[in-house]
Amino acid sequence: MTPPPVHPRVTEVARILREAGSSGEVRVLPADVRTAAAAAAALEVPVGAIVNSLLFTAVGQPVLVLTSGAHRVDGGKVAALLGVPSLEKAAPEVVREVTGQPIGGVAPVGHPEPIGTLVDVELARHPRVWAAAGHPAAVFPTTYEELLALTAGTAAEVGDGPSTPATGTVDGSPTPDVAEAVGT
Image (cartoon, rainbow, N blue to C red):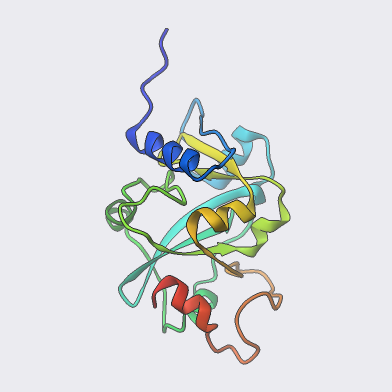
């Protein structure tokens, strides 16, 4: 029996990873893994080592937040980092339009246009993290440092847990480099 054809988005993500010098090989799983818990179970890794790729809009601009599967994004915290009044989760059709990829399979790379990206500092706790590769059944391993480099992303605390002073300012005002990095 021949394996099913690889989705074109997965091929594109694999090409970008190769060209960037990434050592991570795209892996196609036997079934879709649309949640961090499902991906962690399939890969036999901690859920915190799964990269959730979530698209938001801030003042009409897309913002990609790459967060640890171990927690949720704190929209208020991210909005404050960006210096905007609020953050809205993008609708599925907006996700596909902006990223070219379906929810559950949004890769950190391979989008039609560059997207300002925040990378959760919690991912640095894991020597290897796994991110979607353009399709809900495709993933690739990488490191926190490589994820920052691949995406030209900005390290940020985005989770709903307690904060440590890795980003932002003491008085809660936006960190200029974060807001500038994602174009808000």
